[in-house]
Image (tube, rainbow, N blue to C red):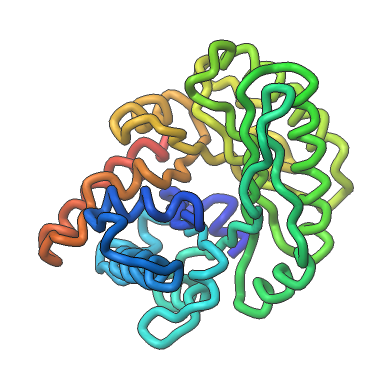
Length: 290
């Protein structure tokens, strides 16, 4: 898994929409909110969507390095096997787990992560399920002191993950609509370099970053010995725009969510669904291979 995460061809599929973002993901998939009345029904529907994607013959380790799962997905099965086990042992795709519990209210131009109660227990369950790493997301809207607080919190959680022998994906997302996006990205690069330089010998992290306004801004991080991989989020850009920006950032691979599932609907026949998914995978894999 380490070798594939470090140098495998392709990209990481983000299939980790959680409670807050699931209704929107289902709506884009063609399932309106009046189709379900409880959270259990909602999560059943989104698991059906994810299962359809993961079991598709075009979704495999040839072009996909890893997949990020929501806790609810990790706890379920795909074709009778635990989800993470199915990903790795059937599809040759490295499983990651989203561990954050969502975002706190905005303060100082950022949204920190909410507290993560029971994190050690969750990490133990992830290990038991065969998960390789984790993902935790914060949001940066403006440069300033808040941005440093985001990086500090991210690496504090990363240390807890590393202590369990898992590889954390640190995700300090810069809002694509920020009026000072480029300035925030410059500050973030410096803060991240300081943080990875401070890691102990043998520790590595992955970074999931917004596609920057300045091409190859994160080159030093891509080449850093303590950074296993730099992956990019789509952040609200269309797949076309995301892929165009990604192709201009050498050594960075995609970890798209909405841009990855763009165009997939519950109403499509399997033939239509697989063809749409194949096109998405081909476009994102090609943009990641630069």
